[in-house]
Each structure stands twice: as structure tokens, then as C-alpha cells.
Length: 288
Ligand code: 13P
Image (cartoon, rainbow, N blue to C red; front, side):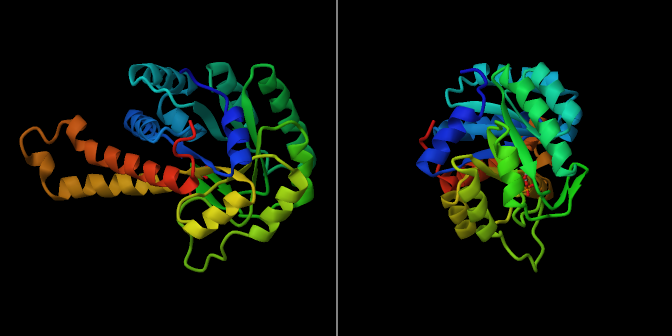
């Protein structure tokens, strides 16, 4: 199956009460590990690509070519969306033109008026091409690929204004942050999440900063309308740890252990294992 928009998989997830994982990718190994894990558990999946990661992989077209080739080469049958993460206005348009099947336009750092007008323009552009759109209200805290958010809690009325523009899914800041959570983190503001759900109706909600949120909070957030959960840092941490263990054990010095196909194998397996754990936790196993 080729790339699909995230719309159908998220509407189904919202109706049936589970969430689809967005796993950010950085290179070929990452992408392959995520796709094989989703296929093994028969789960829909969203591949997230930040503008920084796309630049690292030499551009949006390279990413589209790699992912499309891999879907065919690996015989992937589960629904896969290729999604721009925290896109700029220009980045979102460029991604759509390059063949992404889904984009996030993150206008949360603009005034609400400007966020509305720019989101509307992206929605119109994407709708004509069958591409799903994620919008954001209230910035997500922490830093990701140079994008820093203050970690606001979104205003439910502003969420409603953005939801009404015809977006596919809505990310709302509820105290979540990218990267590791600090010791004194207050947790997700589930009360505001509940208010957003009440006012935004059946809109699939997106939870960013999936790394390090306690499992019971994830499960509760799903009952309050979260249908897409983004995970990035956790895969990076397990990849780095497994690779470090391999090198520290001197395995790269044994035989052909320096071959990148061997050197990167433990890290790739660690990513796949993490993705499978998340798919189980989010409830999307068997939902392809
Ligand atoms: P983490 O890096 O905290 O898992 O967050 C990922 C994310 O929200 C991507 O948009």
C-alpha cells in the first residue's frame, strides 16, 4: 500500500478509543525499524519528520522517495502516513508538493488571528490534494530541532476556532513538553484536555512530547480524545544506549563487527522494541 493521509486512521482511532503513534524518523534504519514494528503488530503508523530531520536526510523529496521505496520493498500492508512535524508555513506547502501525505502547520507562536489565517490557507491547499493537516494551539514546551516552546496550556475557545477551520487533528498544549520531563513536572493538565474535548467535539486530538509521560496518564488522555501520540526522544535514547553497549563491549572490533549493518543493528532493534511497546500501550495493535 502506498502512503495514505492520516485522516481515516485517526477518525477510526477517535471512534474506537485508541491512539495511533507518530514516531519521528532520522534515517533509513529508523524508518525501517518503525515500519517493520508496525507491520508485525498490524498497526497503522505515522512517520514524523521535522524540518531539521528532513534537511539532515537531504530534503523532503529524498524522504518521500525513501519511504515510498521502503513500503514497496518491505511489502508493508498497514496504513502509513508520512507527516511533517511542527512545519512552518512554507515548509508545509513544500512538503505537500514533495509528496508527503500529511502535514502539521505549527502556528502556535503567532497571534491567534494569524494562526487562524495561516492554518486556513494550509487547510485549503492540503484539502485540494487529499492531505491531512494538524494544527497547534498553545505551544508545546521544551526544544525540538531548534523549535522551542514555552509549554503553554491552550485556551479551549481558541482550540475550537482552529478546529472549525477543517483541520484533521489538533495539537493542544496541556503542560506537555518535548524531550525528558523535569523532576518537578506537574503532569498533563487533563482537566483542560477534557474541556478541549467537550468544545472540539469529535476532533482527533494530538499529544506531543510522548517520551516519559506515565502510562496511566497516556491511557486517561486517550479516553479524553487523544488519538495521535508523538514519540521521538525515547527512540533516540534507546538507539544511543544499545549502540553504546555494542561499542563498549568491543563488538565493533570483533570480526566484521565494524560493518554498519552490524554496528547499527542493536540500535535498530531497540527502536523497533520501543515502537512495539508504544503500539501496545496506545491500543492500535491489530487496528490496521
Ligand atoms: P518527544 O521527543 O518528547 O517524544 O516528543 C515528540 C514530539 O512531540 C514530536 O513532535
